[in-house]
Amino acid sequence: MDISTYLNTSSAKIEKTLDALVPVSTSRHQKLFEAARYSLLGPGKRIRPILVLAVCEMTGGNAEHALYPAAAIEMIHTYSLIHDDLPCMDNDDFRRGKPTLHKAFPESHALLAGDFLLTHAFNVLSKAPKLSPELKIELIDLLGKAAGGDGMIGGQLQDIESGLHQLNKTSLDELHRAKTGALIEASVHFGALLGNASAEERKILQQSARNMGLAFQIVDDVLDVTENGKKRASDQVNGKQTYATLLGLEKAKAEAEQLHQSALAELRKLPYDTSLFEELVSYIITRKT
Ligand code: GRG
Image (cartoon, rainbow, N blue to C red):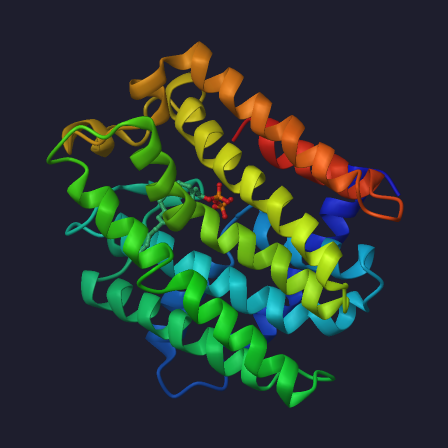
């Protein structure tokens, strides 16, 4: 299967699962569900849940059993975008090609829709079909850590505070390994656990994901300057350091490419065909949006 067919079929399965897990019709609180669906089912790239499915399959697991865990990760990611866009954070107007949730719905609904998706993600993990209770607890623990105070939320706070002082490269890496990298690493880790990968394979995949996560953020910073028409002008208003401002565009691109190659080199240590997954990693890092 070529990579674009793989991306399309995986996205379709994930979106079907998300649609079923956040239904409108059965809820008493229709407005809340509508708000959550507005963001969750918007045109995201589904990078994190696709990573879950791809690693699960590559390591010998059944991707159908990975759909709930993949959906849970996308819910956490979507909640983080909703909250990140709020007036008290980045105060952004557009997301996933349409007005941000707090522009389309009352701000209170946007805040609560984010809270709902965050909470619901753990509920979804707890009821994932076909997984043992032990595995579910491991996934819940892993996602709680990745999205929590020492992961994404901690990274977000560091990012907000970074507007107050200049960061060096080491501190910027640390911030983004938490804010953006932790959820990408968790996605790969999820896939490896669902595929029952060995400890040695998990170590290799984790190292690859670590490089991928940072490369993803550097590319995001570069794209904000080169492709997105400075859509995140809020970063400049807030005086936030980005890889583009710290390193300059060319050095930032070179750094992302170096991390990209390191991520691929790690994968080639695995004892099976990693070519489709390598293409997925390259798509994630060399994307244009
Ligand atoms: C508010 C708790 C809280 C956390 C926010 C990850 C994050 C922390 C905020 C998102 C802000 C941002 C744009 C970070 C840069 C990297 C990133 C996560 C980009 C968006 O991810 P994509 O490109 O988006 O995968 P889609 O829409 O395709 O899913």
